[in-house]
Every structure is written in structure tokens, then in C-alpha cells.
Length: 180
Ligand code: 5GP
Ligand code: MG
Image (tube, rainbow, N blue to C red; front, side):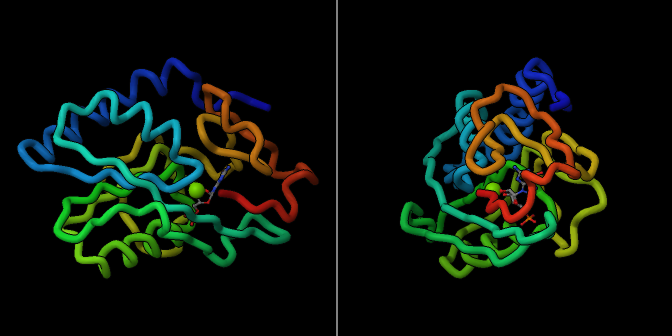
């Protein structure tokens, strides 16, 4: 496993993103919706730098990947989602790959009548977006590789790592793994 983004760089970047978010939402109450499970560290670290009137909720999404790492069907559950009607919502995910997860969840939130909707991702894979979806906040742009750590998993492992690391694309372990 090769470290792509060390802990220290994440620790520096999070408050920078928070400052931008705090400026954009100044004087407005915000609902942050994290996409479980991958966004858990990102949300937890970011909100502690936000001096805003803030509510936090989560939505559960899982995109199944088959033989390749291409995005498959998206399964999501809004059981944990708080009332978002009339709220200024900031949707946060760990990583933007094809764009399927974020665009699907944006549609779901819009249907619920949010007052406004912005999106943020810790990581964005360069050259992978198939569904047009431009996040308002991006932590880091990364090359097209399968990454784990800081919330991101492989088979529910490695989420606890305090850094982002690359798991080799060639690894046979990557086959048939659901990513959440
Ligand atoms: P998208 O729907 O944009 O194709 O993919 C986004 C979701 O797929 C993310 O929420 C994440 O769960 C998963 N994903 C995409 N790329 C990676 C990756 O490199 N590593 C891990 N662990 N998950 C990924
Ligand atoms: Mg995810």
C-alpha cells in the first residue's frame, strides 16, 4: 500500500475547506448530509471547524462494483435522513468517481424540497466523471486509482487509516467488492 495523501495534508486541508464553507453559508442555517459510510471521517473532522448554525444527518449509499471497478447499481436508504424541506443542504461524500452517487442523491434531496443544495467531496478522481456533477467543494484531486483510508474502505476494511493510500488496481482482492 502506497500513501497518496498523508495525514498531515488532510489535517491542513480540512480547515481550509471549512473556511470556504463558513464564508459561503454565513448567517444561514445549514444541514450537512454525509454519505455513509465513507464520509464519516470527513464529516466528523470538517464540522468541528464550522462555526455555523448546523444540523447533521446521514444517508446510506452503496454502489456495487462487479468484475471491474466501474460503478454498478446504486442502492441507497434515506432512513437516517432528517427533514430537509426548506433547508440549505450541503451533501458530503468521500470521493467523486463516476458521479453516479452524488447526482442520484442530489435528485433525491431536490425531490424533498431543499431550499438550496451544494455538494462537497474529499477526493475527486481526475478524468472519471461520466455523469456531469461538479462539486462546490473539493479537498484533493487524485489520479485514477483505487484508494482506501480516512473513511474509504475495501470490503469494509481500512476505513480507520488516518491517511489516503492506494490499493493496487491489479490486486485480485478488488474483484466483486461492494464499496460503501
Ligand atoms: P461514483 O458513484 O461517483 O462512481 O462513486 C462514488 C462512490 O464509490 C463513493 O461514495 C465510494 O463509496 C465509492 N468509490 C469510488 N471510488 C473509490 C475508491 O477509489 N475507493 C473506495 N474505497 N471507494 C470508492
Ligand atoms: Mg461512498
